Amino acid sequence: MAMSLGGPARLRAEPNVTPMIDILLVLIVTFLLITPTLSRGLDALVPQPANERQSSPRQDVVITVLRDGNVRLNQEPLALSDLDERLR
Image 1 (tube, rainbow, N blue to C red):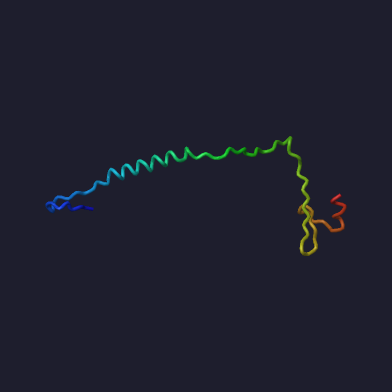
Image 2 (image 1 turned 30 degrees about the horizontal axis):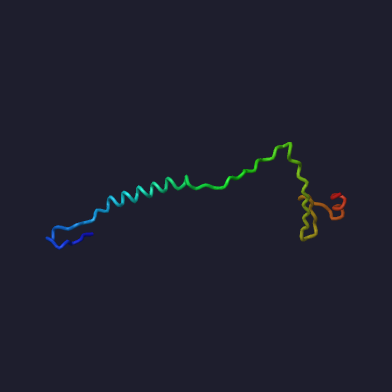
């Protein structure tokens, strides 16, 4: 990119953009290094695993009724007539 100053044809003033690019790169690197230290999130408590003494055995009951009429209690096949007795 050249500019004509109106003098002899061989004298041209050309802007030197190299120092501007250097300054730009220094600013980009500076902002990239500073930005992560400025971000601050909320303090959160991470859930801790339960101790063996504190946890009680799970007593979930899952009853599955299949399309063909079969019943399962916790993935164990069971006759429908025995379901009442088993749940008690």
